[in-house]
Image (cartoon, rainbow, N blue to C red):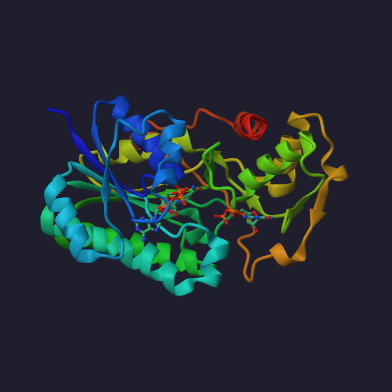
Amino acid sequence: MSKKALITGITGQDGAYLSAFLLDKGYEVYGMVRRSSHAGVADHRLRWLGIAGDVRLVDCNLLDAAALIRLVAEVKPDEVYNLAAQSFVATSWAQPSLTGQVTALGALNVLEAVRTAAPEARFYQASSSEMYGLIQEPVQSEQTPFYPRSPYAVAKLFAHWATVNYRESFSLHASSGILFNHESPLRGIEFVTRKVTDGVARIKLGLSTELALGNIDAKRDWGHAKDYVRAMWLMLQQDVADDYVVATGRTTTVRDMCAIAFAHVDLKMEDHLRIDPALYRPAEVEVLLGNPAKAKEKLGWTPEIGLELLIAEMVDADLARLAKR
Ligand code: NDP
Ligand code: GDP
C-alpha cells in the first residue's frame, strides 16, 4: 500500500517540489490549501511542475485548530510536512501578530492535531536559518545558539522548540529541519533572488531599465529547493527523529549573486542597479553560513545544484515567462 503524506503549504515553493518528489516515490499526496477568492490560481506552482492533477487538495487553515484535528483524523497520514507559514521576513514587521499566529501557533496546532489524531505519523517542521539571526558562531550548526532578529524568526523559534518539546513530551517522531535559504524558479517574487532574476529578465527584454535593492552586503548560504525537499524526506525516514541543518556551506553576498544574474544575460550590473534605503530592514541578518556535516553523515544528503546553475535556471525561467506574456 502506498504511504500517505499530508503537506501544509503545498501551494508554496517547497510544497510544490516536495509533492513532485513524493509522487515520484509512489506516495499519495494530500495538500492543505487555505480558502481564498483566487482558487483558480492557488495551484500555479503545482501546474508549473505538471502535477496539479496528481495531488489531493484539502481545505483547511493553520489557524483553525479544530479543523486541523479533523483533517488529520480523516487523512490518517503516515507523514506530515508542516511547510505553511507567513514566510517573508520583511512582512513580519508589518504583520507581526499574524506572523506569530500562523508561523508559531499554527505549527503548534499541527503538532496538536498529529498528537491527537495520528500520533504514529512522522512530523516535519520547516525551521529556518533565520533563527540564528545575529550569528553567535561564524559557521552555524545544530549546536549554535539562536538569536532571532525579526518577528518571523521569533515565531520560527517557537515552532522549532515546540517540535523538540512534543518529541520529548509525547514521543512523537517529530523532526525539525533548519534549512538555509533555498530558491528556484518557483520562489516567491518578493525574495531577493527571484526579485533579481525577474528584474534582470525584464531589463534584458527591454521592459525595464533598473533594479532597486536594499542591503546588498548581506550574505546568504543559498541552495536549490529541489535538493532541500529531499533532505526533508530523508529526515522522516530515520528510525529516530532529530534536528538537522541543511545548507551548502558556501555564503555569497547579495551583490555577487546579483552580478551572476546580470552576467548570465551579458549585462553589467553597475549599469542598472540602484540602492533604495527604503528596502533596508529594521534589524538585519548580515550573514548566514551553514555546516551541513550532520545531514551529510546521518542522512547521506549533499546538495547537487550550485549557485551559478540555480541563478541561471531562474533567469532563464523568468525570461521564458515574460516572453510568453
Ligand atoms: P512559501 O511562502 O512559498 O509558501 C508558504 C505556504 O504557506 C503557502 O502554501 C501558503 O499558502 C501557506 N500558508 C500561509 N498561511 C497559511 C495559513 N494560515 N494556513 C494555511 N496555509 C498557509 O514558502 P516556502 O515554500 O519557500 O517555504 C516553506 C516553509 O519553509 C515555510 O514555512 C518557510 O518559512 C520555511 N523556510 C523556507 C526557507 C526558504 O529559503 N525557502 C528557508 C527556511 C525555512 P498560500 O499559497 O495560500 O499563500
Ligand atoms: P531572508 O533571508 O529570508 O530574509 O530572504 P530574502 O531573500 O528576503 O533576503 C535575503 C537578504 O537580501 C536580506 O539580508 C535582505 O535584506 C537582502 N536584500 C537586499 N535587497 C533586498 C530586496 O530588495 N528584497 C529582499 N527580499 N531582500 C533584499
